[in-house]
Length: 200
Image (cartoon, rainbow, N blue to C red; front, side, top):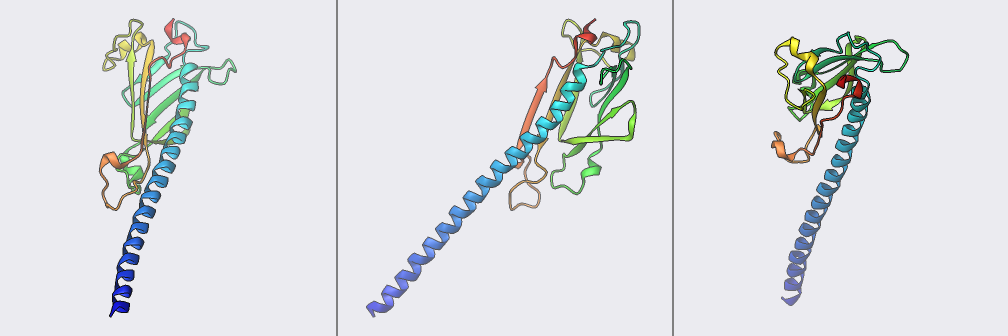
């Protein structure tokens, strides 16, 4: 009888140890996935902001003072002029976000491609990353927000405030529709991203 009780208690204790091991493994996996997702999100954000900073610092460079620098100013679409590659030929720089339907295959419903065009090329725009939020706001020399609904105000733009958010395309969860706060997120905002040439 004692042998049977010893066997049963060993089975129960062994079962608890196995269950605890599964719990520890699951927690470890969640931590590793979260850490990896954080790293990927940070790398994606850095890749986008490096290109964006470079372009915006060149806006207005090499453009004569009597010519327009700002060609289009919208909250998620901007087209401006500047000598990007320092060949003394003015370039047109354009940034805009695509529709969420382009990334309907990802788990994150907020994913959108960020496009960049130089001199209208490529025709469809070059995808430089995936963002979940991308906004421009425009300021005058006194840091007042410029009303961009009237294109005559575009010449007042001296600073561009850029807001950018990147999330991972899939959340580590058992839910088929994860909550928005389950995605790993990196946020970036910069106010003084325009070159001195735009402040003339």
